[in-house]
Image 1 (cartoon, rainbow, N blue to C red):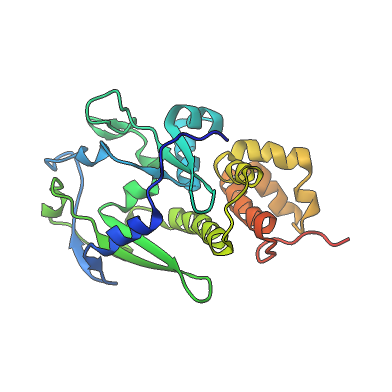
Image 2: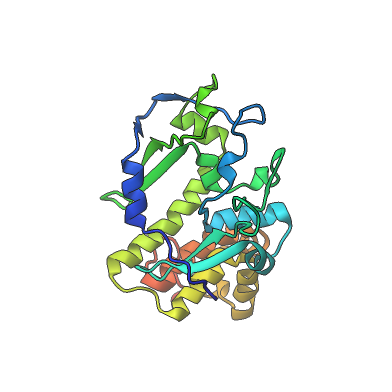
Length: 265
């Protein structure tokens, strides 16, 4: 894993920013729509720092038909979270073009729309999460009302649950929360990952096609309590492999057998 020198935004600062915005209570409605007839269409797709989660990368790669290696080389910048050492990734914008637009935006809209990242799907909401007393994920939603955005002038009403369902965000949030919980465990432990551990995380989370080869070559699945059906799913389905990879990282990094168990003897 190689990284650039761009510092990542501090997670606490992001949380503080979200909490400075108007909170959207459960069931509370907001009015928003985004389509080519909205005057500011595509304006939010330039000059931004767009973080990519492991599931974002998986879906974008599938949409583009690219390997992990190809996608990361062409479209991503990799860094490490300073407090945990976990790999983080952001989308490489077209900085050589005026306004630094997203590489996938076109005049008619997003060219990778079915595989667009979770942050794009969530907008104009902001979602803040924290870990509850039982290790559960607690979420809050906020309205991100940018001065240029004319989408709030449209006549379509939503609440947060309706918006998440319409934007197909459950799979994104479930996977992203799982990665954030791993980072929270490392933060609570008080010791950032060493480079070997960071490389394992990068392989399992962001390089899932190569991770499949690693699992086969190293015989990893044979050393775990897994039925044959799940082994086959892990090797044939990258989304299932990412789910497994996050469970496997919890076992490898923290010794937790909450989701996976080693074979005895």
